[in-house]
Structures are given as structure tokens and as C-alpha cells.
Length: 102
Image (tube, rainbow, N blue to C red; front, top):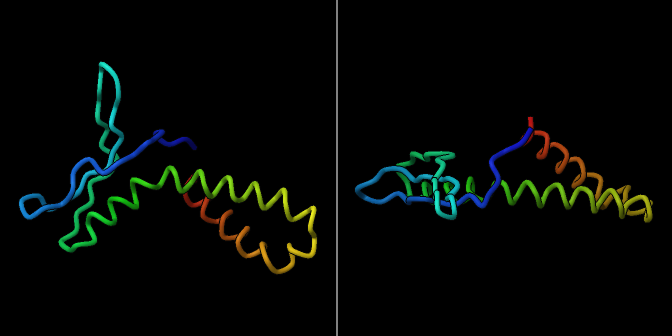
């Protein structure tokens, strides 16, 4: 499953007048088009923080994929590490990537 390529960013933040934050892709070039990916409604200070987390999602997914591939390359070369150091991290990365790409 593909997602809209980034960079995603917080396009507008929650303020006293605006009770939501927008997350999207800001277009570039002559035909600049902003694409709204999410509108975060939250009456608390967490609204902007949640919007920032959503905006970071494509980057976080890429880091998870790269880290998983690194673990898969390192562990076979160092079998004793696989028993305790990386197994739980590998499993969590696989579950997180699956959750993001279903």
C-alpha cells in the first residue's frame, strides 16, 4: 500500500479562534496545491502535538523499514545477538509496519 509522499507538515495550528490543526502535503512549484491529509480536533494543548506526530508519520515509517532491514542484515552475522537483543525490536517493527501499511 502506498501513501502520499511527504514531506507532510502541519499546515495550520490550533488557536483560540481555530479549534483544530490541519496536516497535509504542501505542494511546490508553479502549481502549488496543498493536500489536506488530516484535520485534528482536540480541545487541549495536545492538538498541535498530535498534528505534528501525524505529519511525521511518513518519515517514521521509513525509519522503521530501514531499521528492520538493518536488523535483518546484522543478526544473521551475529547469531548470539538475535536471541535477546533484537528479537523483540524486530517483532515490534514488523507489527508497526504492518499496521501502517495494511
